[in-house]
Length: 495
Image (cartoon, rainbow, N blue to C red; front, side):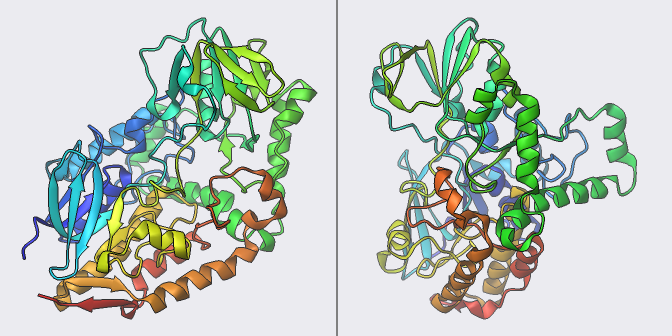
């Protein structure tokens, strides 16, 4: 049976875009990219809240094969990332092979034909020999489980679905959450709001942000000086590697493990005047237990007279505000939910129903066997199905490095399938088990499993208490994706 397309890519964010471009470069032309939204860019299409920006230097947050010199800042604002996504899609002629408004709700593997059938929310369907899941994890907003929220008479919006028609000028605004999105949005809206109340459950580690405007001479130098882009990228990659992959995965082996915390505490002391507020903003868990943030404005916002930091737990949302556990009612006209996303939860991992060989359900497999995937790409029992951001795939480096690394792994499998005439490609249980054990053996060195992390309320942890990050330096991920043993997969021809 001939499929509608050889490859289906599910997701039109940078994961899907990168996979599409690299497949095109590798000679795989028969693919279709399916995207739920009405535009490409993923997180940068959906997230348009005030202050949205990349949280690693822009020199790292781009494809290695498509480095641009036009970033306005070291840490580019969200609109520039959205523009970069559109630029890449157009330059590499991906748009004509993209179907927007197509939310995939199910994927089922046919054991006889070795094809996947995909169904979308609007009733459309297609078949594909191979599927690349590129939906990411920070895609589905997570509303808070707070009583009364549906009865609030004011405006409610999540940071990931910002309503730009809402005028905050002079309004009483309540922000629930102090994660990475909140760190960006709070200082951006504080000058506009009449009064801003921030409800904090767990303080975030906030480090100084080495950000600056990139003046025209600097952009010209990046464009024209030989090696300038390479040098800036290497410096940026080194910064990212030191601040997360090495610090998180080799915490117990590094003599400078506490340096980041000292920098964070010094930043907090300089930024916040009131000692009581400063204490409330001081994390009681180790740096790295949950996603830290970088900002030169967030902590300073709490020096304003029109900003209140509330750390008493929320009891309920009322018709006109937020009631805390001590009985105090905090009036609000606008409720901003900076409560993050569904990550390692049902309905997001996977983001749609996936039924593999013999009707095996991927969500059930993970629920019964813990999250696991060979190099974050493949799961036994689910042939011809690959993921960009599967369990134990992402090591915390640049997300673009992950995209290129995982796609290199996928292309190696597809090339061998094409070479051998295989129509079914499946990772072996032995290879998957070996990789999973290797990841678990490395966790003793990771920062996540210190006792203090129990205080972090971190989305890094799944229901089993695992942190499905890849405990590897970036160079290792790059090498193994290109030189893994092909015998770790079974290639079969069932035609």
